[in-house]
Image 1 (spheres, helix red, strand yellow):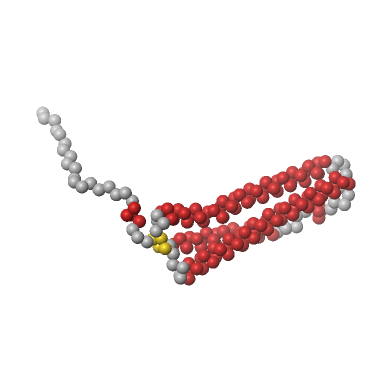
Image 2 (image 1 turned 120 degrees about the horizontal axis):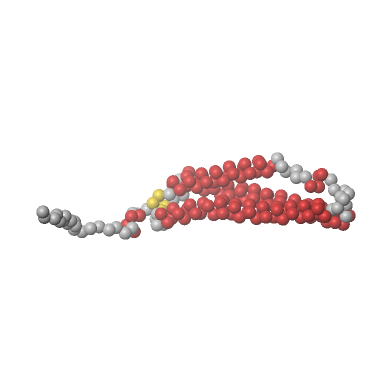
Length: 174
């Protein structure tokens, strides 16, 4: 039996896992890490930067704490997912080396290529998405606690007509 197709398959799987990890990292970076700051910056633009946040309010402190904890846990989940992918790639590289050196499949067992974490991934993703919802909820509550200061409409351009304009309708004589 030729080992070239197996080596090709393992190499392709390493490339796929690498690409999936990069796509995962890019999506997480945009949605989770940048998303709340887009919401905050749109609020800053809408209020022209004139707002306050009462840090003595227990709800505000709780929301900030929940938000920070969610971000740290999400970072841990993301690094765990990446770590698992890289460990699997390293295992496949070892298998490729072993198969290439022996030029046969002797000594390769099902344990070498089977993932043993199939039950953990759904749990990790379920927890991660719940943390995303919880952090979004805490940001939403935090946004409701922001209070505008001053008169925002002062900086807007207002057009007023000083004198009423007279409009006359000319009728044709018969």
